[in-house]
Length: 267
Length: 347
Image (tube, rainbow over the protein chains, first blue to last red):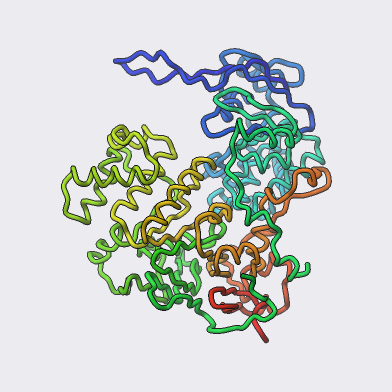
């Protein structure tokens, strides 16, 4: 995937007494390259344009200028049908899995829905593929008929990932996909993503506001600030130089020391 | 510091009695049960603790472990489906369960206030200024101008600049961080004795959260207000709390001073949770092809399953036979630390 000079401006709401002159520049000249089978982390504070970029990549927003190429083909400015065909291989997983899942559908229906939209007619085939996707993300099949409200946060996130995987995409865009989860579940989901990448050669665009976490699991890190990419490079380099461009809250020192309990428990 | 685990002495079971004298809040044996569609489950299970005046206590636990239910039961704001089956809450010399609804209104907001997780508690069609001063005017006799002056002082203390603009704004005109600060101002304006902060920084990004926490830290040094600070993130509590209570499956599994709990966790859950922070992994040591991020395998028990043993036993690394047979009691390991684990119970 290649992104060149992407720009997007949101015009402000127009009131009858005041014509809007200013828009919000969400993205300004964004250039990024994501190689197959690697992970790129996009880090920025809230309001820096991270989610707008994700929306442009999956065609939910039309950029004002610039080009997005996926596997050599441009995906900007296509009609609905062509865009759907071109973007088959890109899936977006939203931040808030509870809000992104239809509360009236069962887990199996949620996973099957993208297949139905893409015109997979055979009911049996759809069921098989949804079972496969559930197995991939480690979601027990007995949750198949549950609704999202009956699942825990970690299970819902797995369900959202399963829905993303069922079309067998090559690029997965994860918009803060684990930041709402508990610490103990966060690690489980990230390990799952690492395993899936190793097994299927997926590429990830990982969007987050937490530099510390994503730098452990990505090949490259880009920092976005007010719609511009201000830093781009290997995680270790970016972590070292990001103190100026993206100051991070220091991690409390008391948590970085190895706890003494390890020695006691002797495990 | 340093509590010797080997010399652990079990003392009063059931009760983590630290500051018996001068306690602002004392909760004993509190049990809250929910009945839903004919099924019953225990959300808070025999919880006992005390908060001294001016103390900040952190309550750490995963989602669904009963943190919020505990917070709501302190204010007696539990939903209809929940009922307290046993226990007592004594706040500032008053037994909260003996008060009627009118007396409770005098306590809520004025003596004990709560800050909710998201700022959607603000009324969207009311200016935030009147929502803040309303709290004061409900409890104290004062006119609009006096209330506004009080609000100005509180806004300054929690880091809200541009007082005039913000005071007259509607919630949707403010950013998420500003809205959260308004919710905090609402809780603080009456100068209550106890503030329950239920994940006040969960809905804002990390740098804003840090600013808000810094302001709250200053506030707590300048007044003798006690805080009960609820969070799922050990890092949030690290800078602010004096004491940490770790909650799992409706029970308080560990209780002690922050420094000791974080550097020498006694309960296996606390230990495992603290290991989960990705920041602990040195960047150069982590190989994505080979290494995995630390996590606690499995998941927390469903509320409806009733386990005979310890609620953490299925995820515990040091599981023993006894763990599945009966529930561990709370054991006092030293004067101010207690834990609910068989490892620390003496035969």
